[in-house]
Amino acid sequence: MIFAFGDQELDTGTFELRREGTRVGVEPQVFDVLAHLVTHRERVVPKEELLDEIWGDRFVSESALTSRIKAARRVVGDDGHRQAVIRTVHGRGYRFVASVVERTGDGETPEEGAGEDRGLPKPPRTRYARSGRYSIAYQVVGTGPGDLVFIPGFVSNVELQWEFEPMASFFGRLARCSRLIVFDKRGTGLSDRVPLTEMPPLEERMDDVRAVMDAAGSERATLFGISEGGPLALLFAATYPQRVERLILCNSYADRFSDDIPTLAARARETWGTGGVLATLAPSWTDRRDRRFLSRYERHSATPDAAANLVGLCDRIDVRPILPSINTPTLVVHRRADAMIPPAKGEALAAGIPGAELVVLEGRDHLVYVDQEPVLDAVEEFITGTKPTAAADRVLTTVLFVDVVGSTELAERMGDVSWTRMLRRFYDLARDDLARFRGGEVATTGDGLLATFDGPARAVRCGQSLQRSVSDLGLTLRVGVHTAEVERLGDDVAGVGVHIGARVASSAAAGEVWVTRTVRDLVAGSGLQFEGRGTHELKGVSEPWELYAAA
Image (cartoon, rainbow, N blue to C red):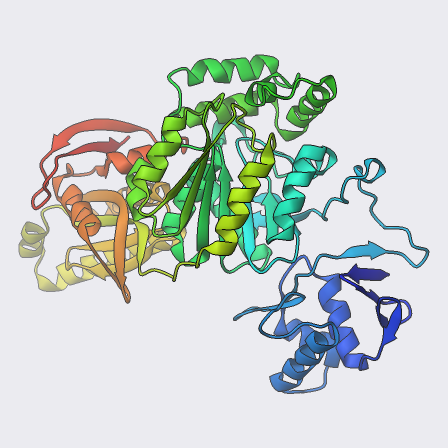
């Protein structure tokens, strides 16, 4: 097999490295390192795997591998600073990141791209990342200096998009200024389908972004979210600021963009597969060939019911409360007469995110691939001209507070020894539930605890599970959940958001899990149901808060 990258090709049949057709001298072990990395370029290769592959049962120090990596970089014109061919993923291993074209010895490519006959670029190889129960399809293409994760709108197909010239040229240009990572969200495109009753909320789709970045060996990246991908990009940037260098939002929104979303969902179900839905997002595409492709793209991206449900989910998206917590350099691009998302939604994004830059472009097409050059010009200037933000100590976090109801009376009635034994059993059960729902214990309070979560739905379900777990002990709990920007102080957390979470717990009725409106809005689509508990004045908090009980 021949692996071509840049002006070089690695031939595993003849054991040669050639540059512009001329053989380059390479030590055998250095060649083996290159061959193993390029063959497994879809993932990060651990150091231990390379040691086993190159040296087998022989014991060698890690410095031997380091010297071979340096030699491999040197022979392909790379170095430890640029890392344009071999990237070090700290704490994990190495990744071959240059764009590669495979050929057999007779010059044929092993996988012919459907678009090549029409002069379109060959599609990158599709890989799969595991996110919980689901496999998420993704591709990596380009050798730019930084990673860019493209978060699509409500549907996509990572392979079909390379067969349509406007889409192929759009992604091709992004790949020339970045190492581009594209993926299909669960339930769409080439990713696993999900039951219609379990259409994923933002929190679960955020897990998909993280899984794809991990599989692609991306520690930090610019996030580029279009349309419905914008709220997902915002939630990820607020929750994992250490993994986001920049944020780009195009024709997007923070909350419901229409009063008639149910009608839009019904229309999607009725006309899906005809190209009619996507055609309304791109009124400038009037050619019949464009419409035929859009019809095919719809059918290969989702089923009619899935498309309708995904449109319906937009009615429940509201990430406005997290906008002030975004501390990443942000570019908001919006078309002045967008056919789907009112320009006011883009203006509200830019106004709500500290320091965000707003670029308003002419046009009415919602799809970013139409009249794409002005969008790409703004994106490329932003990527190359903005200094990346430093990793922040302030992050978006969901806090869960738990208090045992009537703990003082119970302690007096049971006595110190029995009460201490009871508390020990309570904390054991609580820690089991925290582990199950990916919560992190922050502190215990003598008769309760504080924990943090990277997603609000997991926190609410953990609180519900804990209520059930302690019932056999004869205990009743008050549980409060809130999502806000908090300050990390080592293993501790602080800030107004933590104070509000504590006050929600103290206001909760015995045996219930109470949440703020922020939490209720963020878990839309998760299947969780809530009952209103009125507006409450929380001690030490200036504004009243709407509170809800998880049903």
